[in-house]
Image (cartoon, rainbow, N blue to C red; front, side, top):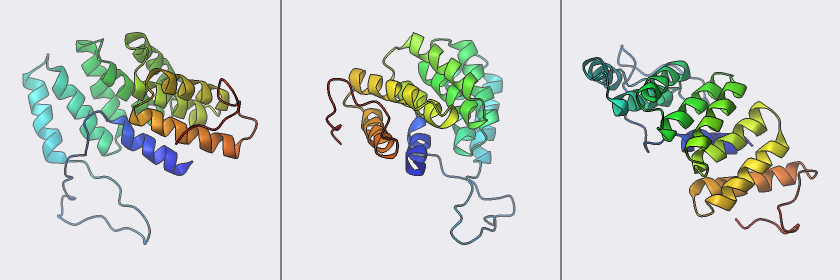
Length: 195
């Protein structure tokens, strides 16, 4: 399930690959233990540039979303959430910013708030693949609601079967059913899901 969670974190951002990180102020990477992954480093230069732009362009939604993404990539989810909230104030129908805000809430141990935000996203776009996938993740990991996770992932597969999120949902459901045999079988019979 750890691999599923890592895949989810990487799959939640809307912008693709992360921007290059700036090294620590002293120019040296932080010390780390063997086999310990380096913590993401905030791209300070990019964040500063975007914050200046946000200050001079108070109605620019895209710069606020990008700032949220920069802080999210650095695992500063509370700050990322603030920027996604600012973007939504300007564009309340921005489903991607709404979903990223929900992910930020979850990453700051606010599972209920995340699910509420995802409900808002699904009102904007009922078949939004990233949102449905994330609902499953929060239900499975944040709420230990395997039935709710199953329902969200099955809905995702039904409405967006060819998306990467649907492929991840199939894998998640198979893992869930293997590790928890009492999880309900897929609708329409007990056959396994296609990979």
